[in-house]
Length: 420
Image (cartoon, rainbow, N blue to C red; front, side):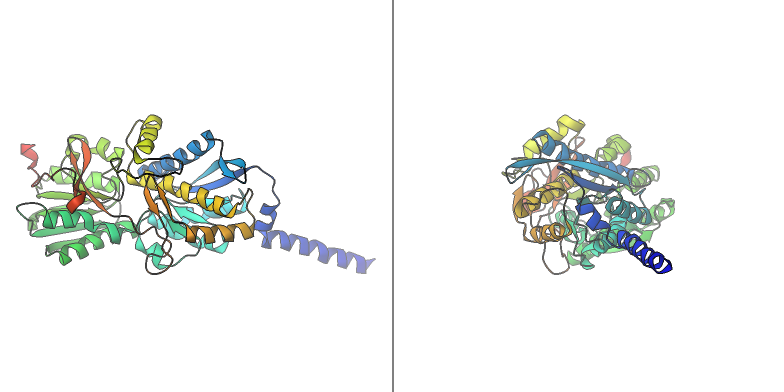
């Protein structure tokens, strides 16, 4: 009797251990006829503006797919359900949120965070569980330098795109600017944006009078005061939209009047326009996509205009390139699923096959080409999109360069605050 009890105890212990060691095998036994998609993004905290941007892009993809009946695979259509988790704008919470989506919600794949810091924290989790993950937003080159097998991104890293506006200002305006000052925030995206501005400026012959990285959420007044004192032609900000709005307000209070204000991501969002009102006028920035582009596709949205019209109808505002990139992330997943004819719920083998399909993906969409790099410093990043220089004119962003990408001439130099 004692021997039988010992054997039974070992069997029970083995069952318990197996249940903890193989969470994905349990997932594969779940029966459902829809794809369960996990989403990690900033729904609260410092980066909630950006989290809202990614959510709009992901939601439009899911809604459009479902309104068409779902993703067609093998003659049958499968709808998608988005399961959102809030990373609270912090890397640690992003990691916890991702693990919960995988082990408790049992999602098939993950659409990733708005910001690079949370993305860098989530990627090791998706790596651990071999969970396919695409971010439609994060732009730090640190993500791709780590060469995560299970993480992809639809927006080129900032070191490949931030030079667009610097090139335009250095080569395409008169009188040509000679000096620049750069102020960045100490986070993985913003710091690399500032570094990209600095590298492009030095390459193009602009003298960098001041380069400073400050903590996020600090008082930016002392740094901007010191930049005002050196009187640069260009003031470039490496930050997200919330900090950019604050910096622009401080510049106005200090009557700091450079010939050009430059900001990379944030200036294309409705929050930036709302936060600054008429004071957003003349600000320069970058994008890899605008609603005015003329991409054509056979997938979901047939043209850029069709996407822009659908976005405006749903959200009552024009889309920016991160919203478009987030929608494109969903499209990348749907087309990879179709390539391998995978139906829900995905098994471990199907998830690995999905990674292989994403690595081979080469499609033209309303957003442009999606083709993830298979090697090098941009590993698994959609690195081939060309940066476009933008400027606020008449309350709208317009394409001002570089070179042949110009739709209208840049307005330069920026009038002083008291002459606007």
